[in-house]
Each structure stands twice: as structure tokens, then as C-alpha cells.
Length: 204
Image 1 (cartoon, rainbow, N blue to C red):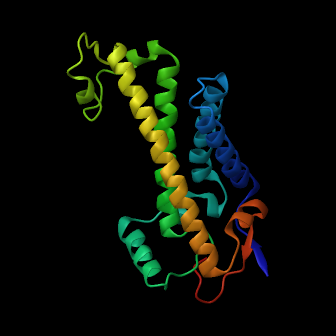
Image 2: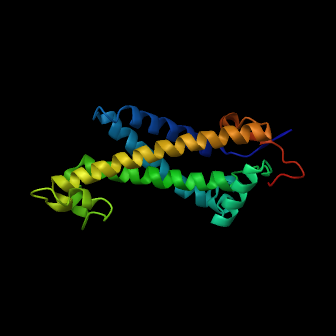
Image 3: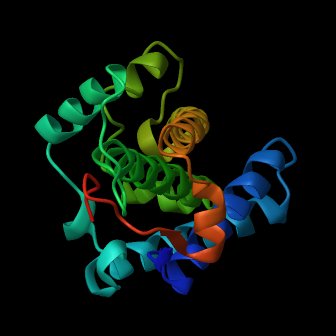
């Protein structure tokens, strides 16, 4: 017996974001308009997810699945012992990954937006401390509105994109582990929206 868990809009968001990030990544070295378009699509999808996380159905809402650090650590510890419980919605580790991915993607999209139009750099009062030292010794450093500032933002954009890719790989690993441990195809569930009905020891 199966039950409906993921609503159609959440599933559409998920796979659309996968496609947008893949296109943006594959065109990152080309400087093509397609890269920028994919970035704008990703940003729009993130905006939708933030809204849907507040007003969407039960399992789409942040309040339903986001837990504190202690819950995440406890779940990861149970995973290492092979004793983690099955969650009908997102488990605590998966929820933490969702937050991390949304933050990394948001930062990637925002820095990409700044790079797309140099005049937007004027919005920045100063470069973040973790970025500016790399350019502190350059001659004719013009700060956030100059070439050094733009280069720093480009470096940050690339670093955030690489971080996002790393998180995606970790996410896929977590999905694979959960699918094997709980004997259900989680990628397919994100296509159909349905999962196995909760058992006595599962958390619905």
C-alpha cells in the first residue's frame, strides 16, 4: 500500500531545479546566455520553494521537517549504527541538506546576478572579509566597484557552485543509502509522489 507524500508542484520544482543547475554547470565555461538563463530559472525556483515551504501541503512545509542540530546529529549517529528510523517525509539529515542546498544555490545565483552586470557591484559597500584579502596586494585595487572586486565575486561564484555540486553528490549518496536501508526507491517517489505507507516504527 502506498500513500501520497510529495505534491505535484514540489515534484516539478525538484526536477526543474535539477535541470537548471545541470544546464548552468555544463555551460559555465562558455559564457553563454543559456548559463545566465539557467541561473535566473534556478533563482525563481528557489523563490517559489521558499513560499511553498510556508503555504504548501504538509510534507512541503519547512515546519514539518526542519529540525535542530541535535536532531540531525542524533539521526546521523543512528545511521552509523544502522538504526535510523524511516521518515515518511524528509528525515532530519535530508532536511539539513535541503537547507544547505538552498543557501548554496541562493549564493551562487546572487553572485552570478552581480557578475552579469558590472554596475550591480555598486550595491556592495565592501567586499566580505573572506574574499578581499586575496586581492589586497593587487596594484590599483578599486574595491567592490573595480576589477579586483569583480574578480573576487567571480571567485566566490565559482566556489559556491563547486560547493553546490559537492552537496548534490552528498545528497545523492544519502538518497541511495536511505533507499537501500528502507527498501524503497526514493527517486521514483519524487516522480510519482507516492511512498510506502508508514509502518509502526516509522515517523509520519
